[in-house]
Image (cartoon, rainbow, N blue to C red; front, side, top):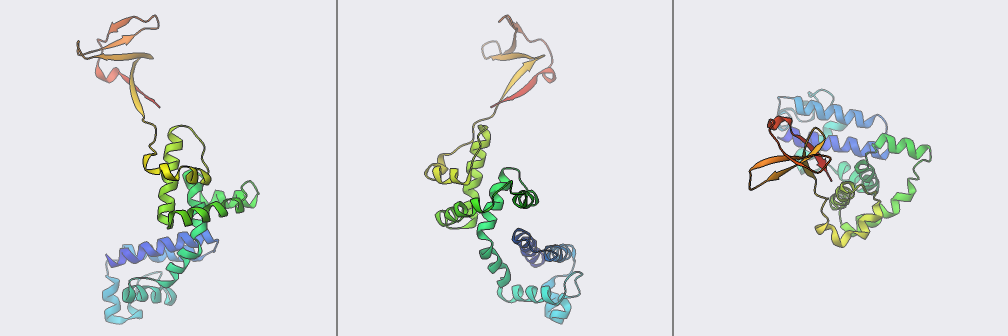
Length: 222
């Protein structure tokens, strides 16, 4: 379990470094995280037996990362990771907002360089959202609720939409998705009294459905 705990922190550190725009380091953290996950040796036992030397027996973990593993084993946290989370808080919220709109971090960076997205336009509302929500986690949850609600209705949404809907977040439900039966493109209805399906023809006639259940086509209606 301890290996997985540290691996999770290393993966998240890599993500934050990418958001920050740091090169090479994210790959090193991910490589170390993967080695920790795959290792059949408990890193805490390796440390107990051989200190830093034992930790460095795990592939991909050099002196610098070994010290961070040691720090976690002693304090259950890594100062560098905690500082990185605070430092990139606004960037995390902006990045997450774009992820809910289907824009990856790489696309966001590319579009920002090409001036297709004015990144600075989103930093102020992201900061306001962080203050309003009190944490990155709650800010992301709020964005999720607005995104799900808006997408179910085919609506666009901005970070500012979260402010506007803030007092309604608990009541903000996505539009219900209903599946309706069809047979060869014609709508069907279920008769509770007859316990049968009927097919409605283009002329409006109700014809008793005599086919098999797997012939019924279910279409999603929003």
